[in-house]
Length: 173
Image (cartoon, rainbow, N blue to C red; front, side, top):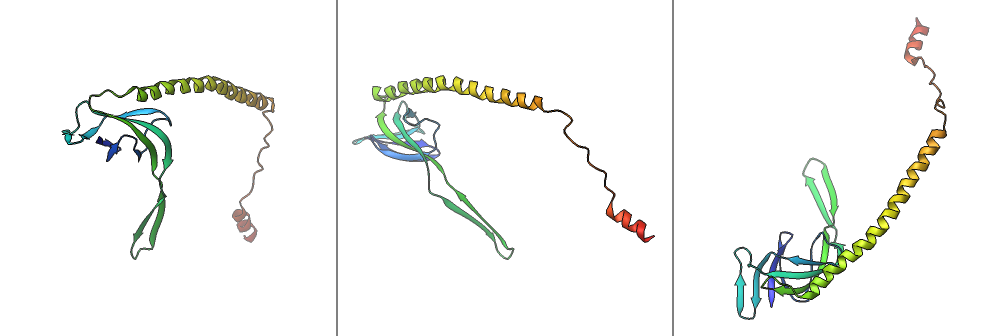
């Protein structure tokens, strides 16, 4: 069984346990996601083609990691004008593994277990966040105390300078 899914403006032919590299997705590593833009599903000789998508067909996937593509050098030049610009670009990518292809819109429980593990990790990060905020608020308070101890009249007034050209003209006259 395989399917054709659309993500990031591109189409990918996927089967169960395939690993594919797609444009960057907003999901954490290890989390489960659902690709719902399924353009075609094939199961043996039976082929379902959507118009534009297959109704109730979904593909379950797990994010393995986020990565970046190879650097592409972009070179612009205008002839006879001495104009040259070189710029590099690396595309942000996400490596995902296909866990399930469902034609009825219901994924197997394995994909749902990965989704329930995600909030537990967020809770652990949320517990760490208040401690970091408290430490961050303590540092600016210490800086305020040191700035208030300095006297306000530490700056010296700048001495007035005569313009050099005006004095030179006065000497000649």
